[in-house]
Image (cartoon, rainbow, N blue to C red; front, side):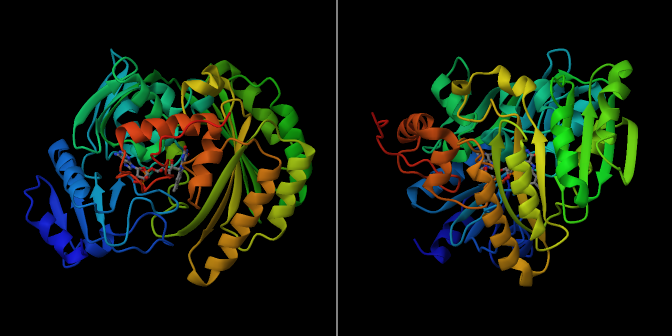
Length: 452
Ligand SMILES: Cc1cc2nc3c(=O)[nH]c(=O)nc-3n(C[C@H](O)[C@H](O)[C@H](O)COP(=O)(O)OP(=O)(O)OC[C@H]3O[C@@H](n4cnc5c(N)ncnc54)[C@H](O)[C@@H]3O)c2cc1C
């Protein structure tokens, strides 16, 4: 179906929300996603405001065999929530969050951002663990797994997921959880947007007391020694502590979050300021919401990104040597490499409990090219791709679907491993046999059988 006919059909549908095509004043803004490298022109954008809208768009896309991109926060690095010529189903107006403190649950609409959830839960002293940038979408992050500052303490975002409302490829709306449609509920906890459009999430919330944050910068010249001492300092760390390293051409920064008792804060954090000659240092009580927003500006809409991550058990000499080598030819000051400490509650679940893989890893690294000038596109993407490939050689085989700037079947296969990939592919053929939901790290719907 050509794009004009598709846009005409959608324009004539009676949506509760808004229809936007190329002639609309908001089209140029709404066709864009977080990553400024992505420049696609959908035939139509539907800004859904109800599950009825979502069902209608899904049915129309399926009947017309149109390309369908589903959008929550628009933060997919490879731009999987926009497309050329097809439909963008934009849920970003559906962002209500209801908190039930006594039941320790939160009900979150399918277009909400992480900041919407924090803003609703934190006044009650509650949190749901998620990611580290507040303008990231809840839907994309959760469906891939969800790692952040509170993963060691409370687990991945999917570990707090109690159930969802999901619109399937045939337009049916299902309410699923661990008892109702357990196979499908398993698949969406890491399988990405492959199985349907989530219009509502139910999360367990957790009580969060006062939080303490330490931040120290070291010269990159000291990086190998600081990283070696950092790895040693982490041995036996309690799950109330989470640390992150950010490595750029100008600094090696260590941030440490303490969520345990106030009395233990200083002892747990101070040693990360003694790993070398710190050039800046701060340590004290901090609002969790400020930590969640600390990288918002750096990762602003419209900047250009190339990101790729991987898991390792530990930060050993060989990894440190590869990291420092990669940073010697970083093309600009904004590009970085970061390492998030995992372990703790992430490893409480068994690997087979969810498609998300890598639970036994001690750390997650990510190479992140960040730049503004299109003239740097080639230098920054090739640095990111080359560095990630080098780090992958000493990383675990598992990977994280949510932070992959490249796409292709090998990405999903590597992320899940063969056994889980084939299990997901069988479920995909059951729930989305025509691959309507294919703008994701795609799992092909074929009657796969796992190799012997
Ligand atoms: C600045 C930045 C910071 C990040 N930080 C973290 C982090 O700390 N921890 C972490 O784990 N990850 C992080 N990520 C990765 C992030 O989890 C993924 O980019 C995720 O896909 C973003 O979700 P989104 O809803 O914003 O994206 P979108 O681009 O809207 O969607 C991403 C994918 O999810 C699908 N999708 C979107 N909404 C729905 C829905 N309602 N139902 C079904 N499918 C849907 C889309 O079709 C697409 O395939 C970060 C990414 C960025 C760009």
